[in-house]
Image (cartoon, rainbow, N blue to C red; front, side):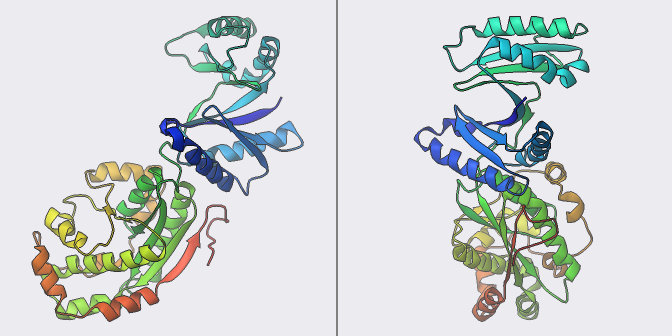
Length: 404
């Protein structure tokens, strides 16, 4: 019996004349995610991508499918997916193959129903007839079952398509959203905390390809703090795909701020300088936006006046997907994407090391700009950009390894 994976997309189906572009990017992303697992062939038709394992035995094909499913569930653009049995377009073949194929699912179930989707209208049986006939055959082989059309334990689906028929009973939810790369590129300000990895996940879900930058201030921040951020990048790649990562040396800038700028403005000035550097790196990487993990009112630098001061130096849009979320909601997503346990490791980043005792809660753009103008930061900004170290994290590489 030949088993394949059927990939369904959601909002991509509404893209009209641009739909083909979105489908091509999704297919490219799928190929990339499955590249190191084994060999597959791919085709697409009627809002479905068909993924066929190429192996010599059914057992080997099953192993390929089992390895592919968890990776595919993290590919944005996929609304649902399932392993399905390929049948000839005849009811005799469908019914003969369905009984043994569905054994594992139906043996442990108490209730079931059959659904039919007849994309090929030339098929001689209509959908209600397919459901009734196949349901009767399954009941005769699994007499402990009862039909429940409202809340069944198992829904058996028969899809009649152009080339073949397909039977499946375990449709799984995909990651949703849009394929990474269809909305352009953006630069993420990645700290070691809970929020920024979640922001990366949320914007990748809207089709953005993510590049990240992190600001390190040795000796005030440790190698363990940097390792923590690199581990977060590794956790993000199953969702975001390959990620370029910049580690920016920030010690001299922070020491200059500490020596020459009013303490109450220290955090907001630091954020402005980070934004300037991030925008410069974003232009180098052909990014069209900056992403931050800021949530309104969470800390002093995330009040409306403070955000306005930061945005005043940005040269491109600043995206804040967490802006209206509370911490509980953010933590829930961080657990889902498996970054929470890394984020709470007690290694401080440069934002927490130089926190002022009494930060200004309602700074004005003019006052902050005047305070920043007291020091010529341009040479230090150039030095930080020149000293930025770049790495590329890729999901298909063994865990813990990176491409320089």
